[in-house]
Image (cartoon, rainbow, N blue to C red):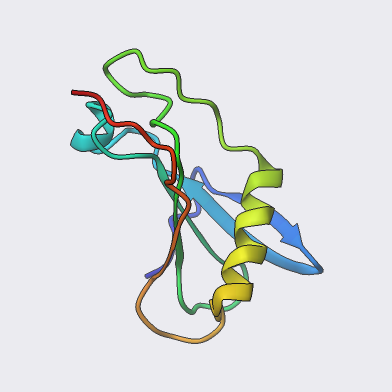
Length: 109
């Protein structure tokens, strides 16, 4: 699964370039703050396994007015390093690798 280049950003972590993208519009559950914000990362030059990161915050464009802080490049880099430590191999084909960082997320009613 390749990320759409439109709306994606490049980030270099420890000498390797990755592409990351946050979904512009929330999913239905993200819009209702029932599930947290997620974003995807992949190796910029080689197709392989996509990293899907689940955060502990609501989507910034949720419909309930919950405060959703933007994802900062430093947080993306930290998540990439954590996923690599946990066994993510970005150049190898396979199913998406999920990194769950949703501890502390409180869904709305």
